[in-house]
Length: 223
Image (cartoon, rainbow, N blue to C red; front, top):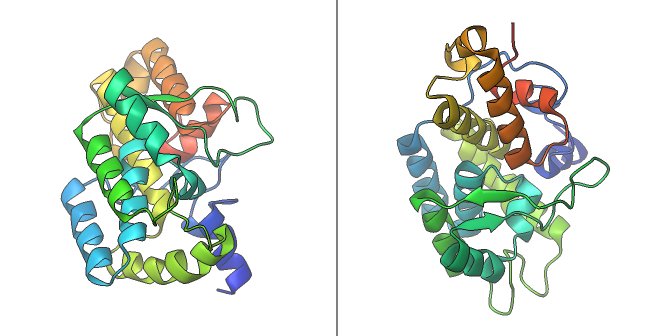
């Protein structure tokens, strides 16, 4: 893979390199659904002095943030929202070019999100509100941190950070419907199509997508 291709994956402009298409239907079970697996990856990243990559992984798994969103997240603001509102609003680094890109995107707080925010604040560079130091650029983070971190992810059977976003989507679907996502062997969409659609709409909102059909690329399609 060339750096240009690697950069596109890191920036998550496309998920094709991860075996999925944004407007397609996921065919493989998302990796990173097991939190013990994610914990092992986080520990491995930290042991290799990639603490910021570890924070990104936790944010992606806990909140469904895209890679760019996790890197650019306004950590003081998110922590303030968590403390005073019991939820966080994902706004920084969101994608343009589709409906809802700058719309409110509230995610209910839980212990996993608290832990992810705690680590992110701890490893945030001095003088920064996010995971980029004042003297760094977003591109330099991709080159110096994300690219080598991806090798560690691969060594621990995780195709990329985007898989953690899909794992979040499957978890949220199950929390809403009390049934597994289709890609995980669930068939609730055949039993209660109304609730299935409502769950997909909510997951789409939390992922920051403007179209409900895009969720099929994360949790499987409806049959």
